[in-house]
Amino acid sequence: MKKSLVYGLKALSLSWKANGIYSIIAIVGAVYDSTLYPFIQVFLLARALDLFSSDQPVTLSDLNWIIISYLVASVIKLTLKSITDVKEAYLQVRFEGYLDLQVSKKLTELDPATFENPEFQNLLAQIEGVTGSLQAHFMRFIGLINAVFKFATAAIVVSVTFPLFAPIILIATIPIYIVYDRFRISTWPFYVEKRSLVTRVTQYIKNLLSSDSTSKESIIFKTGGTLLSKIEKHQQIYFKDFDNINSPWTVKILLVKFIQFGAFIYTQYLNLSRVLAGTLSIGNFALIFQQSLNLTLGAEEILSMYSSMSARNKYIDKYFEFMNTPKAINSPTKPASLPQTPYPPVIEFKNVTFKYPKTQRSILKKFNLTINPGEKIALVGENGAGKTTIIKLLLRFYDPTEGEILINGVNIKELNLEEWHKLVGALFQDFIKYQFTFKENVYIGNLSKIDNEKLLREAIAKSGASAYVGKLPEGINQVVGKMFEKGIDLSGGQWQKLALARAFFRDAPLLILDEPTSAIDAKAEYEIFQNVQKLQKDKTVIIISHRFSTVRNADRILVLQGGKIIEEGNHKKLLAKDGLYAELFELQARGYK
Image 1: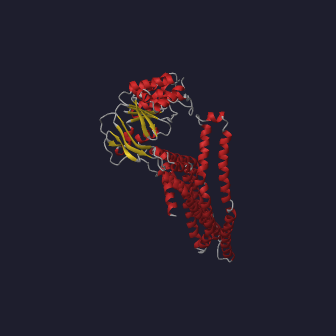
Image 2: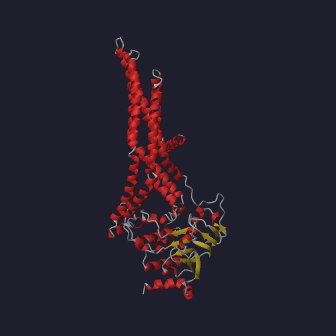
Image 3: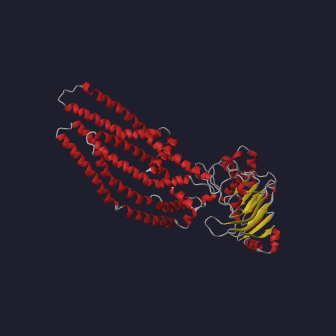
């Protein structure tokens, strides 16, 4: 019970942060509308019936207090009801919006190591509907408060005349609670864990069918039916298992409801007997009948709301588990200062061995590398050689399993992670296509320099994007991508040049380019890297590429295989060695002959 109430209070706290005083008005309005106002009505009616059934003549003045009380109570009801009716949908949307914002904010605080964790991805899939679940939890918490008021008010009124009514009805309601609680426990996994696989498969296939980059292939290869059949297969298994658990509970629930109904009929038999015996007035009979009904409803609602909240706790757990998910990699509490010289800094990998979490294969093995200030380094090798892993470790997306990475002699683990990332500009192969203006796409590279128009123009020129930006209807103010109105989509090469401009706008001493020219034609590629060579002389550049035309001008080319450097040197030296680099170069060169 404690956990359910704690989560109820947390839901109230979240609602308060989203909607302020209206959260309290919602509770007061619900209690008044379904408990207090009906009680006031039947109480006033009972007093009026007693007046009319007495032997004394009744005048209008005798009814004044009843009429005034009714009018005041009704005005309060109408006021609260009007406020809640008008605000209800708006407040629900605002509450959900607040929760979505909190989830999005949390996502900005996490790191790639966390996102690459399959367990976290499963957790993420389970909180897809968490906003609605927390909203429902809050509404049930209001319902619990209302039910407690309803039961307590009715118990006080009824117990004056029939002290045993409340215990009888409460005891008769317990079987309903037990059955409903077991029903919810048995079916709840189908709303959360067992549904997560269906949700993930459905969302993945919806993305395949709707994404700009994948929908074309789906149309050409006519994969729509095959993809839909995968959703249907998972849904059929899910719904079959769900129905097998769900259906048998109908008879059990009906039986326990008859037990409660029998207890209510017995209490009203006793109530009616007192009237027929002349020891209970007609007005009090009506009051006790209505309050006995409230006793029954209140007891059932208390146990039902608690049971529902208790079952929903398992889902709410997922939300708070997500919100409490720590970053995999954190800055030290007392970070070391990075020496200002040399600049760009010297980068050293010392005996670095690395395995991805919960795997046994070493991607890097006793890896050693020193990158001097201003060097242009290229990493080449077949897929799985460890090229991208080196970049992830350098950016401290992960920590080495063994060994250390030094930046100007300081272990990267001792540096403030945010300050280290400020020294890095990067373009990854799976870069983001922001559906904003062209200018905003570039500014995202360095939000602290959005007023630096000179740097903006230089970044656009270095990337080669100046060749087409002037042809856009709105120039640098043009919305790119088709997601929003008046947006213009770019070609693959144009998007990549825009992403390159973002990396150059970073104006950082270390520039990382991971397959930066995979969607650019050979001429544009040559121009870009001529600019990198000329204009980035004072910066350290690390390039990962399968195109030898891209890497051949690097100061030093590192050939990786099995997590180790097997060859090292410039283009001419590596060709002269006639090793793996020369073999791969020759294979690629044949494709151009």
